[in-house]
Structures are given as C-alpha cells and as structure tokens.
Amino acid sequence: MLAERHKKTGRKNLENRQPAARATPSAEPSTAPTPMNLVKSKQRVADHGEVFTPLWMVEAMLDLVKGETERIDSRFLEPACGSGNFLVQILRRKLAAVEFKFGKSDFEKRHYSLLALMCIYGIELLPDNIAECRENMLEILAEYLKLDKSDGLYRAASHVLSQNLIHGDALTMRGSDGQPITFAEWGYLGKGKFQRRDFRFDVLTGSSAFSAEGSLFANLGKHEIFTPTKIYPPMTMSELAAEWVATQMPQEVV
Image (tube, rainbow, N blue to C red; front, side):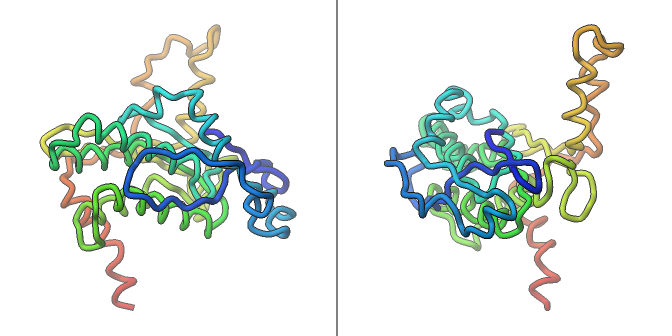
C-alpha cells in the first residue's frame, strides 16, 4: 500500500518498528523517534535499503484515507510491509470501529474483529520481518479480545495471517517458494460463517491494463477478469482454527 523497497530489490521499505502492545485498539500520537529507531542495522540499510517510517508519519499518511482505515471491511495491501507498522495501525483503527459498532455483543465483536484482520494484506521480502509482522498483528487482536493461545479465534487468526501476510517479493509477484503469490479474499456471510476465494496477485494487478480506456478489453466485464483460482465452502471460526492446527501438527511432532 504505502511503502516500497529500494536498492537491490528496487523497493524502499518505509516503516517504523514500534511493536504495539495495548489492550485498546485506538492509535496513540507519538513524537518523532530518534535516528536509532529508524534502522535495524547499517548492513540491512546497505543490503536492502531498509529504513523505517516514524509513527507520526504513519498516522499522517493513514489520515489521508481516514474513512477507509475505519471501515471494518475495507481492504489494504502493503507491498513492503516490514514488521507491520502501517498494518498494525490500520488494524487498531478497524478494531476501534468494531468496538463502536459491536462492542455490546461478544459474538459479533469476535467475528467482526476477525473480519477486520482478514481484510489486511502484506508482502515482505525479509523472513524475520514477516514473522514479526504476523506476531505484531496477532498480539493486537489477542489483547483487544483478551485471547490466549488455546482460544479458537487465536488459532483462526493465526491461519488468516499465514494466508494474508506473504513472505515474497511484490516486484516479481512471487512468494519465497518461487510460486506466484496468491491472496485469499475473505468475506463474512453472517451467523458465524466466512467465505474464502483465492486470487493470483499478478492477475489482479494486470487487470488494470485490460480496463484502461481505449484498450481492446475495456468493455470486458470484471467478472471475467477477476476469476478466483479456488473457491472454498463457507467455514466457521472453528474450522479455520482446525486448518491452522493441521498445518502445525508436523512441526509439533518433530
């Protein structure tokens, strides 16, 4: 969304690393950080051009699309998400909207909080950053809903993050395994049911050329461009949690 990585990768990863650890989902103002907060190491700057954006700037940039950041089902993609400082603040704003609309219903609050998480996406080149990003996002959700690791929602959220936050390169549009990046589009059907459809990232980004005015395919319907690679049957939170457990079992056995 708001950042690009630079130097060897051709992108500039603009983010700050300020792990959020608060029970309330709303964002807090911050003074500009010292230069020591803006890089992990000089070597990483040299190798990847990794420089972090201060929190005050993150908030100012998000305020440019304030209404969307506060809409539960609006979708955001950060193509160089780092450890997730843009995404963390977006999640905080979305959870504040959940609290305002559904705070009195535990059932709705839990399900719409998961939907808020489902609508946030990221791609990151460096493995330690993407791991931190998933941890930071999960921590925000867990603290807001007071979840522990045994909670089905905690496990469902872990599964969603594994699908939405991708270790890969947004320029080549391929994951760390060399395969084309695929994103899951999530929707809440109500009554505890979620719908998932998968789309290839390169197809989604390339579709803009087809719809350009004057192009041969300008009149092609969106339904013909945005064809999912896979459609899943509706799933409950428990079923999403089971998906996560199934992926972790081989690691636990070892």
